[in-house]
Length: 240
Image (cartoon, rainbow, N blue to C red; front, side):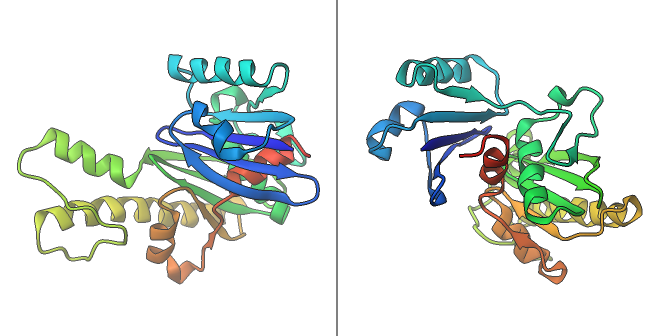
């Protein structure tokens, strides 16, 4: 049994996988120390993907290696794997979460697609029909854009909202949410326009914490909402 850990900017997401069931249990925790009583099993291997390399992540990695000596594998972005090719001249500079989302998508389709991981940051990546990654874009996520306006201005205090904000908005808080959501939506639509000129003719795939809201905003494009895409990519890189 494998324990898969996706260490993002704001959440530590986990999943259990085995040969018989594939991905069969998932969740999120604040710290790795919370995992053993929650899982109620000892994994044979821990596979880690992290966009963070700070001291907090290194401390978590040390704890994991103490928990499972010799059984922790940290994934990095390769130049190519399973027919998928990285666009970066130095692939280690491409965030491993972006690569894994593409890897999971490629395993499903083996043809072109646009994948968007909508979380604290929003990443957009284009993959051509022959598996060549064409590059992509990174922009702040909706919550991050809202927070930047709250921190940088006075009088802006948007209320929490789990869905797409109404536009045109009729109060300042709603206007901030609407503008931030529209910025992400517009970036994705522009990326899809560019994708058609780069032999990326497949579907739009959405993952990440804000994927459901974004899927509603882009419903005319019939996007696929795939919550476990990064974990699916991790299994491709480290099969059971």
